[in-house]
Length: 254
Image (cartoon, rainbow, N blue to C red):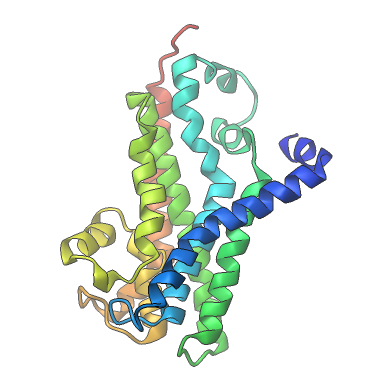
C-alpha cells in the first residue's frame, strides 16, 4: 500500500530519492575534503576509506529500508496505536517493517553502492571471484547485523517507551563510526564494537582482510570470516529479546 501510494506521485518520489542520496553523500564529501589536505587517514588511502564507507552505507541503507521503521515502535507504545498491530492476523514484526515503508531510502543505498564500487575498483586489491563473493557476503551479513540492532532497539522501547535516541546511538552512531578506519580509534572502542556490539563485522574485519591489513586487536585471521555467523547469532538473540518485549507489552489504554 505504501509503495503504491508513493509511486502515485512519481516526480515527488524521484526528487525525494535523489535528495536522500545527496544528503547521505555529504558524509563522504567531508571525507573528500579531509583528503584534500592529507594523503592517508590512520594509514588508509582514500580508496581504502571509500571501501569501508561504501560497505557500511550499503549495509545500513538496506537495513534501514527493511527495518528502519522499527524506531517508531516507541511512539506507537506511548500513544497506544501499537494495539492495532496486535489484533491483525499478520506477524507484528512484519507489520512494523511495512508500516510507512519508505522506498525513497533506496537513495542512501544507491549512494553507498556507488562509493563501494569506486573504492573496490581503486583500492589496491587483487580481485578474484572468491574475493568478490566475500565482499557480497559481507554486505549481506552487515545488513543482517544492522537489522538486528534495529530490532534490539525496537524491543527496548517496550520497557523504556521513550528512548529511541539510545537505539539511534548504536545505528546511526555505528554507521558514522564504521566509515573511518579502526586505526584512528582507541583500542578499547574497537574492542567494544567487536566483542560487545559486534559492528566491526559489518566492514572493519572483512575489509581489512581484503586489503591484507592486520586488525588493531591482532585477532586470528579466521575471525574476519565470521560475519555471517555473527549476524545469524545476533538475529536469533534479538529475536528472543523482541518476543520477550512483546509479551511484556502493556497498553496505555488510549
